[in-house]
Image (spheres, chains in turn blue, purple):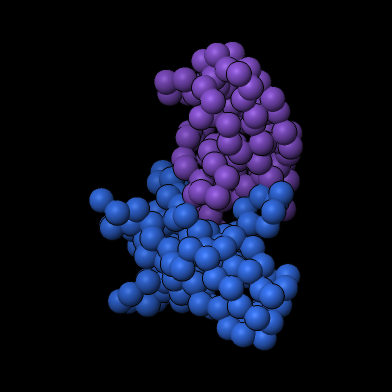
Length: 116
Length: 111
């Protein structure tokens, strides 16, 4: 029973390039959340998606960042024209039902993005 | 908005007991979670409290007081592998936007 799968585990990009982070939720989970974690900082909510729908993107920067969760395939977090400040660990989590109060989030191992 | 406070770092001795506190202020409340995160790894779910009182699960217990906006995680019979960050997270009423996390408490276990 595979958990939440994220890839790549590590990603290095030069300033101005694009970063694509992928997340496959746990089997049977249709709710996906993306979080960003900076060193010595807590996990910051970015976006919540269900299949083909963005439910809440209030934590995501308005420019350069986008997320999708298509009907088929993994959820993708896309960062265009990366800058050094985008360097962080990006965690994906999934849950069986929305609202998380009756369905804890299960996290992937994260993608560590380094912008040089 | 939401504000979650927990100590940055704590040190405890192997075999002992440690209590990690978390206070929160939120516009709505629908539950509090504790997660454990080892360096470089995914956070893993430890406990969930929605009603006042103590939830016990093996060596770990979590307590909630909604009127005080306060929770603690109690770890007993500490083991070296318990060295990790412990994250307090709140879900507000409605809950559609996931969890709001504190910065985490880095727990160091000494022999």
